[in-house]
Structures are given as structure tokens and as C-alpha cells.
Image (cartoon, rainbow, N blue to C red; front, side, top):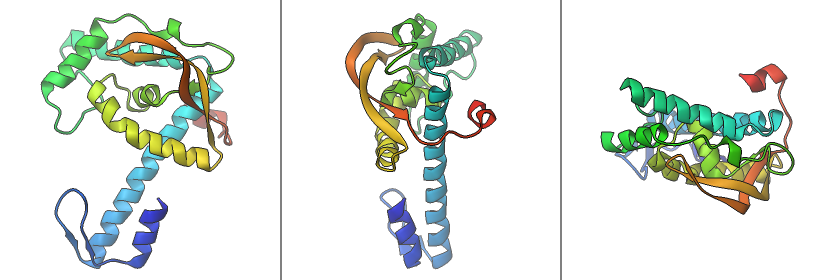
Length: 199
């Protein structure tokens, strides 16, 4: 975010993004950078809301993930949109596989701590599942790096902290194992008004 704001302050007249064509003109460059900053801030805000929700309702991560799993399974049963988290470039087969995994899986909540250490924490992949409301393994893999970067930023700002705690590792909605010392994050910053957390 600091780099983007610094770049915007330079007022470039041409940008060469890593993806896509060059961007020409001061107005176009300013708009492009502003859009990118807005997108990054929205993503960070969604991560913060998820961490705050876990902090205000400790022990509910597994239940929240089961609700996402159940919704995907119901969509698959109804033959509708099979996954909320669309991955650009991912084919229908990948989305169908994610929906079928939800349909053919069992609840995961019993594998999560309901109190004590780790009850308000989430690993990166679990947080991605919650933030994106998805079980799509391709999306979870792709988004994990970005979410981890946001968590590192929040940790550096003293708003989130990294802990080691027992949490399950899930793949295709199946608990592969409970990692005894999974790297997880929990919210330690200020909490908003209760009605804001619930929203």
C-alpha cells in the first residue's frame, strides 16, 4: 500500500503493469493506481472483518466453514452455480469438482477448538475459505499468498498476531489432519461496535 501511494504521488504518465498492456496518460495512470489501492483496501477490510468476527465469536470457525460447505453442497444438489469463488481462467470442471467435494463430505466443525488457545484463530487456507466463502482448492491456493501478505502487514501494525495452535488442515472439505502447531493468526486490534462485527 505504501508503494502504491508513493507511486501515485509521483504522478506517472505511463505505467507498465506486470499483466496487461501499458497504461498511458496521467489520468489513466492515476485511475489505475487508485483502483488497485481500493481493491487492496477492500481485501484487507474483508480479512479484518473475518478476524474480528472470529474474535467476537470464538470457537465458531468450524461451524462457519460447515455453513459454506453446506451452501456449496445445496447448490450442487440444485444444479445451480456450484461455487461462489470464481477463479479467472479456471474451467467449469474445477468448479464442479469443488461442489462435488462439498456434496460428498462430512461436517468439519468437530475438528476445531471451541475454546482456549486457537478458538479465535485461523490458518491462511482456513481464512481464505472464510473470506471467499469457498472450498475451491485452486482459489484457496491462489489467494493464500495475497492473504498472507495482508496478515503480515496487520501483524506489523500490531493489529493481528501469529500463534501456533492445533487446527485442522482441510482439502476438498475433508480434514486431512489436525496440525498440533499450525501457524495461525488472530485479531488483537481494536474491535468495532458489535453490530458492525455481526454485519
